[in-house]
Length: 318
Image (cartoon, rainbow, N blue to C red; front, side):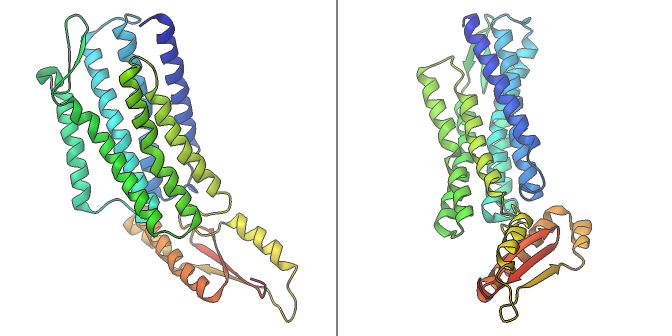
């Protein structure tokens, strides 16, 4: 690989790292539940780690930094494992985001973890067994007998996320939820396309920008929905409530009163203190779902005003 291609790799990977870190920083508490925020951030951080250790291997492989074999082994093992972790945490985020409210049930979760542990065993035992890859005395890198398993297992997590998206599209009626399902569903296609291209264009930096593109599509989609929607409960947010109130107040009259209700959930802090914020988020989602049904029945406007407070607006013109 010539110097220009190495520089291209470095520039593209650094650009991807900066973008991934920037997205992670802008994932605030309004982005979704605590579980969703943690899993998406972890997936982005694993992506950055995958790129960093991949660069270490590249620079040592082509002599730009001293070739120390233990460093090369470690960078290859971590790069490979972190790429699988990207897909693992991505699935957990997608599962929670598409209406499952929390992590998968325990049995399913143990199956997911077992596949991850198996990948780690094949990967980190490679210096002794060569199961995932081998490094020759002449610096040659060769795939091991279980390398295909490590290549496929990450895509399996992406396929599970795709199935969750399809299930949401088939059963969900809310427009914003369906838009997010589309965005999450297409996540797998960019890395798969890049992986296929690299079979014919070996040595080109295609995979990292493809993964970043998938992250960016979902990030922008969710950010745009946050303008007027509360990410956790999927109700209208405070900004939308204020705007709606300004629109409707002009129609208020004695025979057409404008009525505003504020609802505060009693003892909500005890749920967070005793069971943790994940259960608190789950409780808010259950409350919001009940309020949505109530609002549909009585044709009123509902919004999450902040924390455990909700607002209802009733008007003759609604």
